Image (spheres, rainbow, N blue to C red):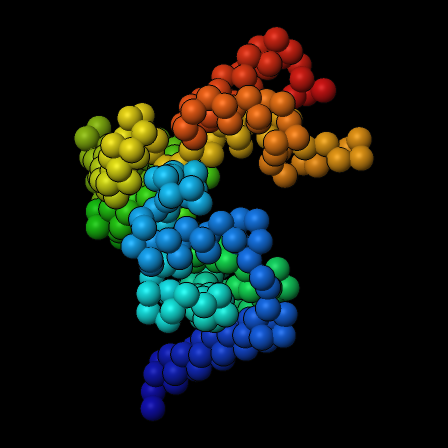
Length: 321
């Protein structure tokens, strides 16, 4: 066996070891400390269950909803369709997904830092407590972390090869991840800004140690990849947005949580005279009760958005205070 083949075999064995290590730790967490779905996890579970039962993407009242982005509940519904509506089986699928996430992190790390450091990063991720315990819970972070790393891998491959296919795949994966967690919308925006800065600073210069393919690229040549990424992103997002427009008669690209999220970011619930940051307020807040009386969830979101902006205009120094 040649030296290169031996090295390749060794890397494969290390990756298999990482996968087994990650899966073993996560499986132990699932088996030893099973978690009953509550709060967000319960909501995801119920949404997925209703989809499997053929009722569609509806809330507890049986009404169509866009309160939560759809991709993770649909992912759960796929698991339930195959394995039955069983939380334990779903968490075991997430154990495998967690192991694949560790491998994806190692792959991305190899692209950026090289194999030795990436292997160390992968070993840390395999046993890192927060990652180990995550598959126990039916939370969208399980799927979002994996898709985030896949999208980072594709944009790195684009930067190395300048192949349009990779940036199109990046746009598709980013859209899917936005349908898992709405906040992931910012990743393609940040990447687009980064690409513009790179092209502006390195016109005719080397990229990743290679000469730029076009020493003086045209304006269209610089913009075309961003257009391709944007089209791929929008086309992937469009079916869900169209569905929401048909249901609510308003444009809802991802979810209707934005009003409550914005409001709760400034006015979280108060318990024992203390603000509980990171927790969304409930019916104890008069504004939340008023929003609930406005009609559907789109109207409630709009009400909270407008109320938040009004309060901030009246007290512009509130955030800094």
